[in-house]
Every structure is written in structure tokens, then in C-alpha cells.
Image (cartoon, rainbow, N blue to C red; front, side):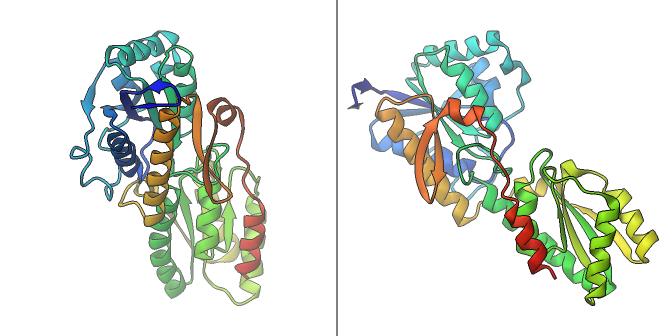
Length: 327
């Protein structure tokens, strides 16, 4: 099909970095939007490694049937530190040429976008990024595919933990994902009514945590939930201080990789469909070096370079609101 002066015949798809619920819905959206436009779709397996070693398979409409509701990625993914090397990037460019790929859709987080930007400088193929990560830390987009699912997964678990906390007058420190950023912890903490939220962006002290729990005790609370991003650390020290200084039982619960799995929510599926369709439209129009984003409720796009160079800031007002509503 010819659109915008570009004869687009084949689109490649790759999922890179950590998996996120809704990646499969995005793969399906790209493959079927391409099919509707009369364009072939090809999936590269195991992330950037599949591009380096030319592991590809067809993604026709039947090949992507039944994957909309599945977590993970049927193309699989992996961490690929060697892709930072120009030699590996050149091999990936050669793979695209060998498979006659005119456009490539990269589904992943900020690290995947940096790889996509580097690759775009070595190949004539147009490259478009789709943000998919439970961390929601990709610059330029209000939300990423998988973020809503991870929140809902954590909410279900913490609601159950709350039952035990109240029944036994315990304080639970619940560790959620987020090594460097606190988007997930902030939203989870707010929506489960956590008494305290700890994120990497805001320094804390054990004494400050103890004082906050004392304030809740003074208001009549004898149990509580502390949601902490994994990058904060110090959960054991906090638990020991709670038991020593306040005489309350404290427990640590690590939700771990469960947050990255499971069936994507309607919200994550919807974003995947919108993002995937928009990515194909960009390629059909001859646009490359772009990142699909959600801004003010509207799906649009920005340059990959802008997305890779910016840092998304956590809205600290969420923490202020959470403190107020947890009283």
C-alpha cells in the first residue's frame, strides 16, 4: 500500500526489556492494522536478541488470534545488554534489510526506546516505539501499557493483606516494584488507602515513619499498610523499629513479579489497541523515529529523541492527597 509517498510492504514487531500486561494486545493490534492495510507483519522473538540473530516469524491475523487477553508476550523478550554495542545494532539493521522490513514497531519501556533510537540511525527502516511497562516511567506519555493492570493486581493482594492487618492489629510493609521510580507505589498506595507511601523520589527516615504511625495511633488506628517501592529499601529496619518503638507487630510482604503478569485489564487492552493502530498509521504515513504517547486523554506521538532525553516527573501531589485521605 502506498501512503504519504512510502511503499510500505512489511512491518516488523519486537517486544523488548521487561514484559508488561497488554504487550500481546499491542502485537495483535499492529499485526491486524497492518493486515487491514495490505501490509505483511513479522515478529522478532526474544527482544533485541532476535533481531541480532534473525529469529523471526509471520504475524498474520490468525497467528495473533487468541492473544488479546494473555499476559506476557508471545514473542518473548529478554534483557540484551550487548545491544548497547554498535556492532550488535548493525547486525539488527542487517536483519531488517535481509527480511525486507520497511518499518519496525518496538514495544517496551525507556530502555527499549533508547535502543530503538540508536537502531534508527543505522537503518532506512522507519521505527516507531510503543510504551509498555508497568513502571509508567516513559517520558512524554501520561500512561504506559500494563500500568493499570499492575495497579489492579497489587490492589487485589493488598486488600487481602489489609484484612489480616486489621484482624491482628499489625502493620504491614508491602513492597511493590519500582527500583528507581515511584509511579507504581504512589498510585497503589493512594488507591488502597495506605497509611504511608515510600518512593525513591522522596527521602525518608525511620524516625519519620515511626512518628507518622504514632499520629495514626493517636487517631485510634492500631493497624496499617505502608506501601514502599522496592528501590527505597530498609523494610526490615522499619519493621524492627515499629516493633521496638511502638510495640506493634510488623510484617513485610513482597509482591514481586506477580505485578508483571496476569490478564491485562480493559484499560491496558484499550491502550494497546489504540497505540498499535496509531503506530501503523505513522508508518503508513512515512513517519519514523516517533514514540506513540497518551497526552491529555488523546493518543498522539512525539519524537523518539524527545522521549529518550526527557525524565518523567512523579506528581508529588498524589502523596499529599494520600496522606490526607489516610487519616
